[in-house]
Image 1: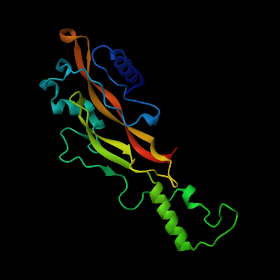
Image 2: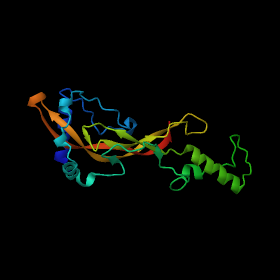
Image 3: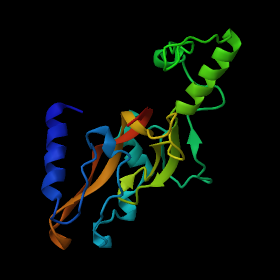
Length: 210
């Protein structure tokens, strides 16, 4: 998508605010605003796509290579189970801020002996405790999006991620997925509606922070 086309879509979306549909800008910044809040839609079904507007073959062609079955679904997923990016073993290598902790120095300046095995186990526990996985769940965006189901990312929030407690997992990185958005201009019979491409940000990485 060219820059001029992207800007045109953005302008159209902004102009449409307060007219017929309350359409939330889908590129929130900074990342603290993720995941994207539920959109406030005009409840009037006149602004919904009709059956002839929902032909899968046509919409797949319009979305093209942007269709990503890992993050979007045309039909409702059979089971909506939360999944995380952590399956037992933590991904990647241990962060240097944990790996380089000096466990032999006490707050009072004295030094203590710590065995290699004990040090390794403690650092592994600390890494696991402070790790912030991305939790994925399926969300229904409604009939005015295609595909209407998106697999959103959320930061793990069941407990504090710091020791001692006080810090929490927050989003630090996101990826954009392209969806089709049913967009209408005008009112009732004078309106014109079509599918436009919009970017939908999804949390892809979380970190423990204040």
